[in-house]
Image (tube, rainbow, N blue to C red; front, top):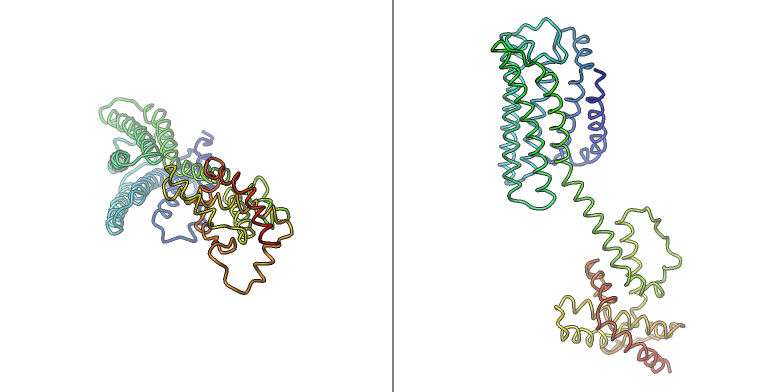
Length: 413
């Protein structure tokens, strides 16, 4: 009985709580975050104080034989309440209703905890039992009632959790539904644990001895139930994070064609600080978006609204939706501007645009607005995909490569 099977989960819960501590300090008023941290703290305490070495040590330190029994029972009751409160807050709903239901569970299990302590004080348990306290004192007045009370409290929690999670799972989809079903599976193990406990205790009441169910089988079922339920609680969050990361890297990859198109004209492409490959995906996307915007700003004098209007009409005629047609038109104007800039290596169009005092005409390349690049990464992604896939953009790329060079010579002659 070295207790390693208890201490390892306790350490894991403590580590998870430390990771959550900064967020808790910043958002203490968040009921869901408080519920998660309370659940992790109580789970760690249950594992720690339920370990046989800890049971013996607590009994010796406090100087009361078997005082660890009501302590563990109280922690289990508090943990049950924390699970119920977490589900209530996780499920959401009207704030007042959520607070009322949470308070009801907390008050109910607080009464149970007080009753457990009172019953232990009234009872008599002089012989220390580290692993078979429930069955050894199954017939002891007041201690018997304490044992039954904590088992009933755990049963109520297990049934309530199974019902709430099961009903909720029928109303949702995806990772959340999978996580809820895993929690239900974990609580089925919890119900099996309680069944073995009740069976062993009732057997003692009838003069039989099935203590091995309580001492050997029940701890295995309880451990499996807690671990499966913990996976269920963590599963939706973990999958959501993986999904978010995948989506971010997908955005980074989809921005590639537009980034490569603009890289030759981006003023910071060669001298900017490059991200290392292990940098967070969000920073990589931000860097790529920044490079794209820099490239577009450098192309501003070369944007031609005529190119954009023609491409927009062509995309609509080809059956594209208006938003998609806008992205194809923007991409066509960008690729034409890149080629116009390549035909003007000395930047004489930029110099002449800066020197002009009169307002530019609507047909002038410098009059085009770069506003199509200011609506965020979603439009940039559409433009990037259009650069690679749109036949309208491909046609504009070929059609305006020669035209851009001839227009440049006309403007600068």
